[in-house]
Amino acid sequence: MSIIQSTDPPLLSRPVPSSTENSSRLLFIDNIRVFLTILVILHHLMVIYTASGSWIYTEQRQDGLAALVGNWFCGINQSYFMGLFLFISAYFVPRAYDRKGAKRFLVDRFLRLGIPLVLYGWFIRPLWIFLTFPKSESFWNWYSVQYFKNYGIIGGGPLWFIEVLLIFAMVYVLYRATFARDIVNPNPIASFPKNWSIILCAFLLGIITFIVRIWFPQNTTISELNLQLANFSQYILLFVLGLVAYSRNWLLSLPEKLARGWMYTALWLSVLPALVGFNFSPFPVENGWPWFQLISACWEAYMCFAMCISVIYLFQRYADRQGAVSVFLSNNAYGAYLIHELVITSLAIVVAGITFHPLLKFALMGLSAVPLTFSLSALIRKIPLVDWVL
Image 1: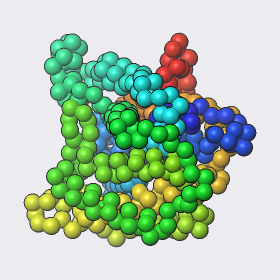
Image 2: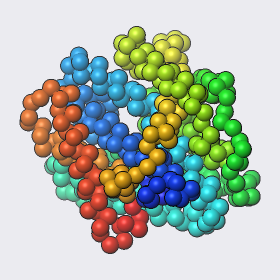
Image 3: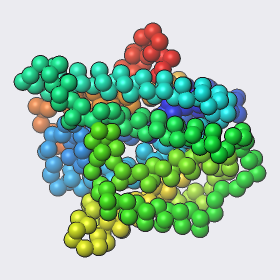
Image 4: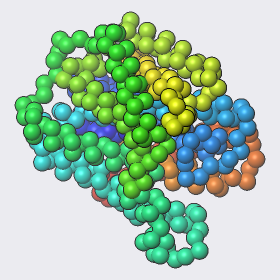
């Protein structure tokens, strides 16, 4: 949930010194990508130490405080961060498509998304899993019989997001080739959506999400593709809104008053989980109308819009510039996303014998795992031809 350049990226970008020096660059978007990548790393570290979600390895040392903080932190993140990733990824898709044409655009996506998806998912990840979690059989027997059965054919672990980007890119190419052949030119005088339309859109998203989760409850996965359809209402909507945002020039027309209102909304919505026990797990549908699931879906939808608007506003206003550190982080964020599962899980296993409170361990590991992951990404990008993909 966005990869290479602000003018043409699936995941993270290669920045230039300042937005004012090149009006085609949106450096605050580069910085948002870095922020979201770091948040993904911290999110999964929190899962490891507080068991507040699903991950390939957890320590299961959860106490009351760790459970409270872990569920709150991961619940807030889950409500918006991958959707925002998709929104800002989609924002640059029309321009890339128009510049390259359908064939070159699609080939580029298959190379920049497909190569890491296949190389990491089919070779690096299974070898790492086999060495990290020893098996009683040979690697080949385990790989050929068990790996794809247990971990999916493609998109294992965090790679599901790369898979989704590739799927959405193919759908976009089909749409443009069939229904919208003209070049998409941003409207310089278009205005940002009104509050009432955002509120209505969030409400409809909550209702649709609730309905979808009747058939596809949270944490149920299409195992072959490692996709959770319970979250796809948000993902599809945010990707589409990203495409519309480009044509309507929304990222450069966000009103301050509206943004600040949604910032206060995000603050109050972040407190709301305390009133329901910091737990938004849906009630089983077979037990009658799951009103709690409906409340959960609506809270998630409004939190998504509130956080997306807040993050975009704050970075646009206060982080639309880059220095040496932010340039380094931007250059290596895509690689950091790809390898973070391997890095943080291996680190957690190495220090598993050290007994600290889960939250203290999370904080210490975050301070070391984030710079290590980005540094390893930088080293990997020095390998010949790798930099061309990452």
